[in-house]
Image (cartoon, rainbow, N blue to C red; front, side):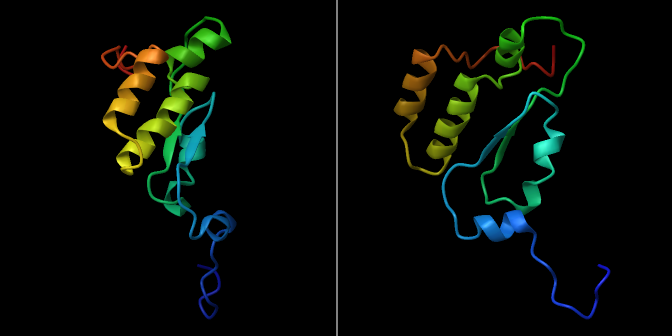
Length: 112
């Protein structure tokens, strides 16, 4: 914006990831907004996981599971992204959910 006569600068993250394919997941114990602010420069399919909540008192491990940012949910986000890209089957996703006890109809932590 400040240099109208120059070629537009490409952000570093966009330069670094140019041409990359795969799964791009950001997970934060904080709000989704922080890693989500990179969305416009990330490859298609970038998925952001975060808490977006406050006021709960529990162990860190329990809160991560509640807000779906624990290790199993991060891995699930990757598997689900792969399915959306056509790289794994629905059966693989369902098997993952069963193995790691991912409940599809649990209440959305943001609605509770």
